[in-house]
Length: 173
Picture 1 (cartoon, rainbow, N blue to C red):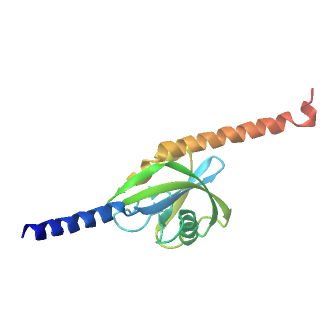
Picture 2 (tube, rainbow, N blue to C red; picture 1 turned 45 degrees about the horizontal axis):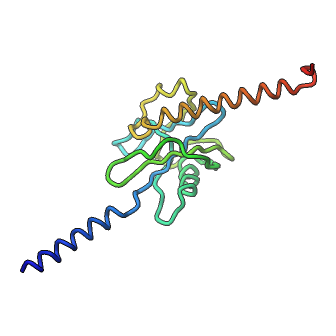
Picture 3 (tube, rainbow, N blue to C red; picture 1 turned 180 degrees about the horizontal axis):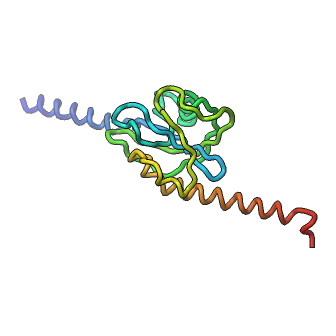
């Protein structure tokens, strides 16, 4: 009888180890940047999230690359085609075995418009406006990183403008 208990215990341990070894469910979100602003989308569904603001995106399907999932989700939800860039912030624990991963995205074509019923409103926000909407908790966790991204983008744009001004012929010394 003791051997039977040991085998059953080993099976349970193997099952737990298998669950722990699984990759997390990844939800990708697009930090859609346009110059010094970022796109926020207000959830319409599900009811638990309705009215909360987020960076739009969705679940990565089995076998799908994260970048491809983000392109697909933003096309489905907002009718835009994007170029996916670098990560923004760390993984955010969504509970269970799910994580949120944010990536910079820039619009290549289309105008962001809620499409699939997931969102009922969108809004472009500058860095100082990020606190004007009620963010969902997971997205709230990456706001410091988004604010830093927008500040760096603004600084880079200012530097480019200064160099362009300095290169003009009427500024030659």
